[in-house]
Length: 192
Ligand code: GLN
Image (cartoon, rainbow, N blue to C red; front, side):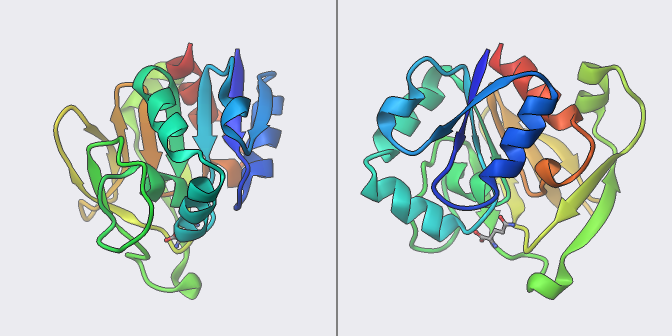
C-alpha cells in the first residue's frame, strides 16, 4: 500500500504525518511520474486556485484525471474543491466527482469553526461509535451531490460537508489537523 499526497501547496505534510502514524507508506507528488505505483492520492487543504494553477503548470491535470478513473483520491477542503465539477468560479478543476461546491461558504478565516459530526459510514468501517470532531477552515460546502456520488455527512442544518463517489472522497473539513486517524483509515480501506 502506497499513498501519494499532492505536494504543490497547502498542508500536505500533516497528511503524511497521519499516514505514517497508520504505518502507511506515503510519497509526495509534484510531477505526473510520481503517480506511478500509487494506490491512492490525497489532495490537501490550502488554496484551491493555487493548487489548480500549479497542477496545470506541472502537466498534472490529465494524469490526475486518469489516475482517478481507477484509483482512490481524497480531497480535503481545497482538495475537495479541486475534485469537484463546479466551484462557480473560473479556476482549474479536475471535475472528476459529481459534486459542486461553494467556496468559503462559512465566511472568512475568522469564521473557522469545529463541529462534531455523526458519520455512519466511518463508524461502520472503523467499528467505532464516537462522533467525528471536524475542523473547518474557510471551508467550502458541498452544494450538490448527483449521479453516483453519495452524501457521507451533513451539518445539523443540512449543509453537506462530506461526499463519496466510489473510491473518490471529498471532505470540507481537515482530518489531517486532528488526532483522530479514522478518516485516513477509511481512505486507506477505499484504496485497497
Ligand atoms: N478557502 C480555500 C479555497 O477556497 C480552502 C481553505 C482550506 O483548504 N482550508 O480554496
